Length: 475
Image (tube, rainbow, N blue to C red; front, top):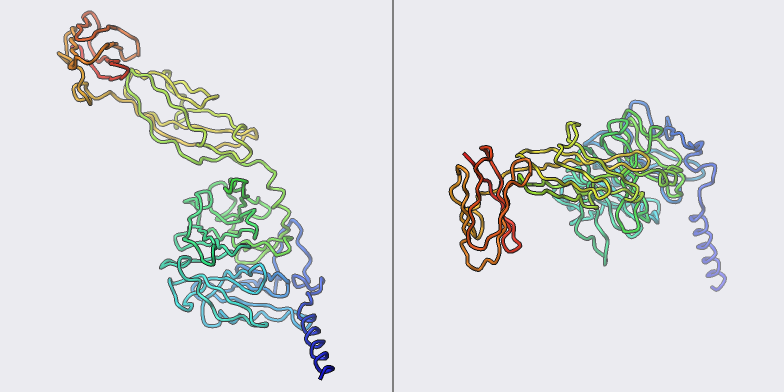
């Protein structure tokens, strides 16, 4: 009995050793020659076939299994290839996709679970739901629906599961979302910032590294090389992300690039281009991190208003522009959106990003502010400055002063309505901002404007440290 028990243990250990054996180096990636920094079609003639649409390959952490999708919506199938008995087998339709459209599979960190989206999964929440399957021996189990709040009545696609089991994904509105896995449950989804959800973007297809140090996605934003390009963003110390960088015209082409994933050994990126699967060396992840970041607009400038004859001053907040190389690298300029310089009354001070001056007439200015970094990269935002006349003084809150007559032939009478006022100062400006008359009073005052040209003037009153402004018409 003792010998039999020892024998059984040895057999069990031998079985474990066999199952733990890794794929030979010359069979990794199907024995293909690594691509270096020049992209190559992946497994041409085996996985990537002429005239067929392939999408989203994922390679297991052990390198002995591959999942990829073929076909077109709504009839997509996930295929599987395995390294067994010293050779690669397949491709065959994976078990969880035999009766349903399923794709965009990605292995978990340990490789014992695979996440994907499927149409008509068990317990459907929407048309397409995020699901997972677990491995039983060498067979993948049936789909398990990830449920709410990940899945909604919308369609959810392209899961990417990071080391702590949190999920990045996208929905049918084209928004990249994030759900934190905490205390054994997924938390309500968060829609990621506009840098990942640009309105010009088609589908984002997020890939986030297991440690969440970088983020690769595809976008059709302006400045790209094709219909969609691949971009990378890096997580900063404060938990926010850097302005995304285009992966460049070696990887991105005039066609569509999407569906990127980094292999578990961090050596290669797989992605889709022109309906075929490609792979390329991952050196760009480190090299792009240390190239110049283009500044971007984080908080657009709201509309500003001013009053004819009254000093206008507006400082653009420091949080308007962000440069991930440091905001101290930025210099600023301002002009009208049509390219013309600012009007003569309006001064822009670069060092304080401040607009100031006294407007002499009503107008609406469409202004562009541009931030430029030391490498010459720029970001711009536009806003309006609306200059108008003030509300008539007898309509102002408090009604502290009565002005009559208005219009007038030249004599203006001002009377304080409250005896509690200590001192009032009156100033009359022409539309060029020049002071025409001044006076101090505590009850009433008459201001003689005879001899001045007919037209509109601005009356400014300082009453106990409060300023009121009105317009006066001389006929």
